[in-house]
Length: 158
Image (cartoon, rainbow, N blue to C red; front, side, top):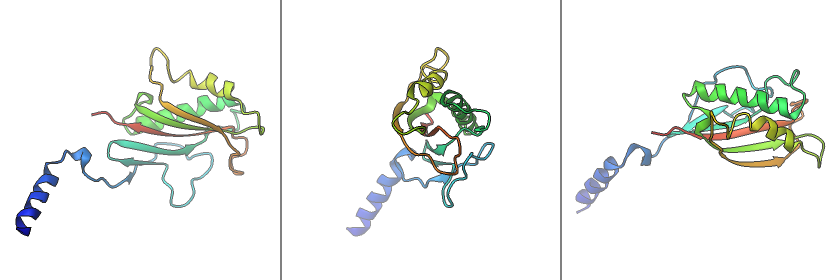
């Protein structure tokens, strides 16, 4: 009886689609320039879990040139776009974003972030508007001049 039960469970597990079977998260190779602030030891820039890509918080790689929230948002989204392309994804595959706005306490530049953000999302060329959370934070001390950080989740559609 136990043998039959084990055979039945094994047959059911084998019949599950690949997306329903357990997957081990795997770090994805980094596509380009290092982040403005190095990631803590033991942290990956991005990780695949099944057909979902999780991207760690990133800063604009050109903080010396981009000194306001709008230009940092544009620089950062260009960087993230290249990062997604390295994984054969587009901004249209982004399903969730977390935006962390720095700047003077109580005065985050939400309008500046939106001025950059709307150049990439909700456009005629790229109509996707992912779910998004935006909060004000104090960015890490090593991120001198950073006004925005973004992490995201993208899904490869099959």
